[in-house]
Length: 379
Image (cartoon, rainbow, N blue to C red):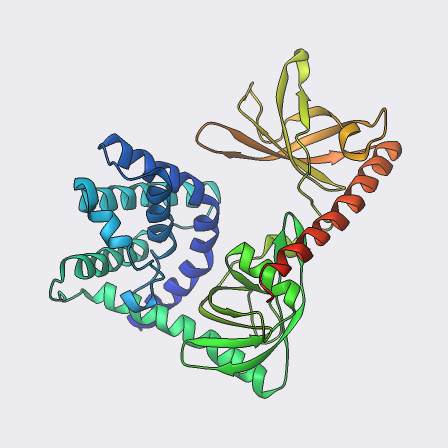
């Protein structure tokens, strides 16, 4: 009974922690790089970033074979007297601290013991790989956690096997510059831990650029999936994926309207009550919302009502295309030295026409760009 309760808690943990890891990655990278620099690590910035990203994206893996480290990552971590143990352990504490904050903000019960078990196993795998230590015995929680990861992945594999037997396709979904790319794919081959799909070329290149594969839920899959890309074969239009995990949800598929990234630098101004103004840059835009990145926060809060205005002249080459809309701030994402304000907008009819024209033009341009990207992978 105790093992059944533990397994249930772990499965719940996997579906919620993925959201945290997706959102928190930029902060973790900045923290790890700053930590390296504060201890006079002479590695170039891009190598520090590479190490940080590799550590972060493998923290839920339970064995060295499952980790996607570059061949020379351990050599880089040993260079210049880097305090490897301190850097890893301190950054893991930072991850844990922010997971607790995330859980509190989203009213999710923080499953701290499971995350600590995961990090303990992760650190041990790193230590064994870097120092050729003899494997140390692991505790009951670590062992159960390791088994749960395998069970979670195997359950997904079994569901996809059944889809293959029933001759059912899966639907992938990736975003490219905000535009959803979604095509059906056929399951070709199922191995113990990986699956090969026959896939549309445009989906494959979008997946490659995104860095991960996302599968939409269906009657065989109770939740959407995320997977790592093991191998792309553009000449045969196939992709092999592994490390499948459930996601709590897939925000991209819940969008009612296409949200595109702009093709120019558009200055945006947020006007609050009392004539307080906050300047920023347009991050993305849809018919119902927009994002603005700014180095300023002049008392803006979630739920604040603001008047937004920005200029579309240089985008559409039309004179007088200034957008003015009322908006409500629905989320604020804080980065190291800036803020991203996510807002719902309430445009009037004339503003709707201008925004629609831009989004349609921009979506067409983005899809053409994706076709150009595809040419780089086809020989």
